[in-house]
Amino acid sequence: MKQNWWRSAYKQNHLVFKLGISILFVGFGFRLLFSQSPSVIPDVSDNNIDTPVAEKNVKPIPLDVSESPKIELNHIHPKDDGSEKCDILDGEWVPYSRGAPYTNNTCRWIESHQNCMGNGRPDTGYINWRWSPKSCELPRFDAKKFLETMRDKSWAFVGDSITRNHLQSFICLLSEVEDAVELFHDKDYKNRKWQFPSYNLTVSVIWSPFLAKADIFEDIDGVSSSEIELHIDILDKTWTEQFHTWDYVLFSSGKWFIKTAIYFEENTILGCHGCEGKNFTDLGFNFAYRKIIKNLYDFIMNSKKQSTIIFRTSTPDHFENGSWSTGGTCDRRVPAKEGEFELTDLNINLREIELPEFEKAEARASEKGKKLKLLDVMPLSLVRPDGHPGPYRHFYPFAKDKKAKVQYDCLHWCLPGPIDQWNDLLMKLVVDD
Image 1: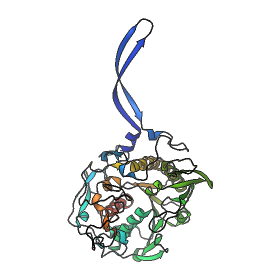
Image 2 (image 1 turned 180 degrees about the vertical axis):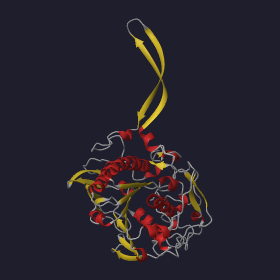
Image 3 (image 1 turned 90 degrees about the vertical axis):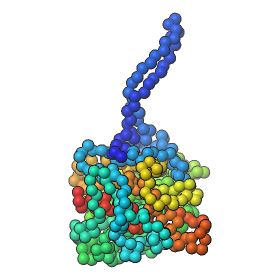
């Protein structure tokens, strides 16, 4: 797996044969011409990349993305900078008998939907693997070293439920050295704050699935009574008003953008995504996601706070034989082989925004002395279909009926589980590099 993905997504060199027949009407008859010439074929997603209009060449993504077009695994890496530095994303999962450094019994911060062992998942093999780069070593997360390095610092994880899933892994790993003390939570436990007293390290999680102002009309089960109203020009004050208090901020988003939404700009309806039957222009979720990611980076660049910013890429789901809403499952018990799982159309579109926009922001950050880092978890996550709760997002789902029809969760991740090693990558980014 080489790091040439997004560059090759925009420019591909091919040698093609052209066959032309030219008919000359002034007595020359027919001539058959053969010629060869190299050509550069731009990907359609390159069009309008900086134009604030609907992306005319990218079709809106269907809400059921399980049948979307796909891309091969070896085309998902960001740029190759040509250096001899180890590519930690070029690797494989290898057996690891030591398992996870914590369990659902030693960490009390795991939400019930991700507590696979506590909910009765009978196999534990999914914790006995570790990511191994081909040309170097990726050290495991060292909680003691991390806490020492982050003494008197503040962290925040800002994003959606997968961000919260990641945060819980982070807290569990650190709690093996010193148990976190919760300082705050809102009534729905979506916004929370902890402290590690001996190190004066605080860690917050902020629920902001769009990173922008959004009025969401969903109940606790995700059933919507109206379209989301998304203000694509206004970042979410839930995190912007606290930004100046944090030394390290991890942002992530993506999956919520496929939901039906009405887009507002300057408090006026601009268009929508997926709003069939409405007299609005369907701009596609790509438009809103790119706009908000640009606004996010503008905010960071203009902030007086010199925080270290980490942007985590979007993540894959592993539904098979359907989707979340159509009975999709994820019953695999071992990592997949390269090529078994591919990027869905949704993931392709998200990465075609995330990676180029990060690179542009990275260049600006360098000029302004800002610290901006990319945490790309897609390559190692794509081949872990065994790491999701599946039916075990529920407490012993087959206790009464072994053939019960149960809602599978093939999007979030078991704790402990593969996403613990997202924090191996995170530590390398902020401590070891």
